[in-house]
Amino acid sequence: MTLEAHRVSWRRGGTLVIDDVTLCPLPGSTVGLLGPNGSGKSSLLRLLQGVSAPDTGRITLDGADLTSVRRRHVARTVATVTQHAETEVDILVRDVVRLGRTPYRSLFGGDTADDARAIDRALAHVGLTDKADRLWRTLSGGERQRAHIARALAQEPTELLLDEPTNHLDIRHQLELLALVADLPVTAIVALHDLNLAATFCDSVLVLQDGRAVAGGSPRDVLTPELIGDVYGVRARVAEDAVTGRSHVLFDPTPL
Ligand SMILES: Nc1ncnc2c1ncn2[C@@H]1O[C@H](COP(=O)(O)OP(=O)(O)OP(=O)(O)O)[C@@H](O)[C@H]1O
Image (cartoon, helix red, strand yellow):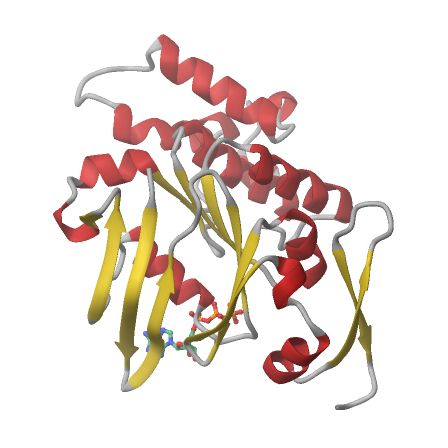
């Protein structure tokens, strides 16, 4: 399965929010979407999800225009974890995760053995098995975030779109979450602010600035002091970790 953006542009309220962006992830890879606040990361994820359609260009799923693919197929194939997906309704954690199985349901069916297995596996993956029967609103922010990830995993997608999934998470859970995503047999596109997490877990990164893709490739090639200075307006040094060979970004608080 491949979910791709081909030269997509999207205008909102007179602004070109996405400007001629192409993204063709390698199947199974983890792609980091980087860029400052307002650069278009969430907007590109919306287009990839099919929630909004680009004004020009195409989003394709396995080569077919996303607008022509059956909604149920998209709902099974593409899972999304967005920010601000909150509810105060009294619902159990397990039921939140169960929502991921909705695209597999028949109109009158209850849980199948496959549903139960997928829900249990997803809860275990994010370390929430022991909280499955808790009320959702009693979870901490980080636990809620992990429950959202579990919902997406229960869907058993081939494409996973995540918008700043490490928000709210402590460092251990940030690392665990991205390690989990990177190891999943899915193509994951992850909007991230933390350049070091991107360098550690992403196979490739796409950097957006004012809606345009200004750099793309391996974190090592893309995350240079020049690029970070140009795009984020901060002074940085980039070192190579002697053990992993991965880039490590060190920020200098003095202005550029
Ligand atoms: N409906 C809209 N009407 C007008 N402008 C919009 C609309 N939706 C998004 N924008 C603008 O598009 C730009 C990109 O927003 P987007 O949320 O995609 O950025 P982002 O990179 O995800 O930002 P952040 O890192 O702050 O989450 C912003 O300037 C935003 O104000």
